[in-house]
Length: 192
Image 1 (cartoon, one colour):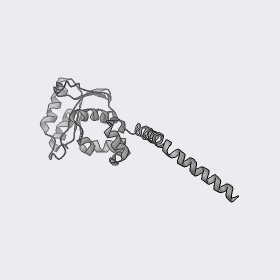
Image 2: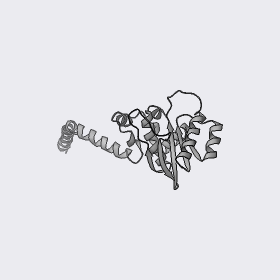
Image 3: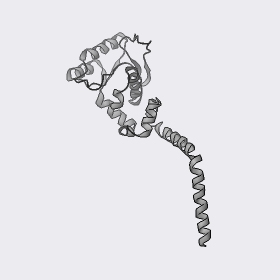
Image 4: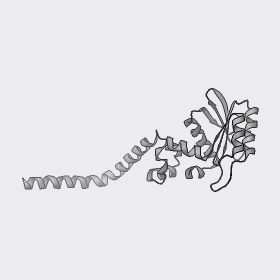
């Protein structure tokens, strides 16, 4: 979850888009933002799930904030569900949900995705999730290629980075390898 806490609120919305896609949602769209002005009407994400129209809200809280997601935030999405004629809602947050919030969400047809669910999906999607400190993960983060951390693309990225390193090192290593091979052949010729 450390990586998720480092995301900006807008990055968290796009992360949530990919998360919902992994959970079987389709046609997932993030509401457009205009600079610092967010006229999304309380809806960050639009999607379809099992043929139903879904609206979603994403709340990214700073690491270290204690407590549960305020129920008022979840109720606001319930109002947006009615306003947008959505049959389902999904609320994604880096904070866990309290008992009353879960009961409310169940009654209005809303799915709650909290930190435990996010971590669970991330581990299923990317088995290397725990290896956050690896060289390749750092390189990908530095290059701003976070969307490439999905499991299907990651092996290709590793192969590409490996090829680039090989091509960069080959001119320096090749003469040394050739001298070694010539030395081995000379040694074999002298011995026989």
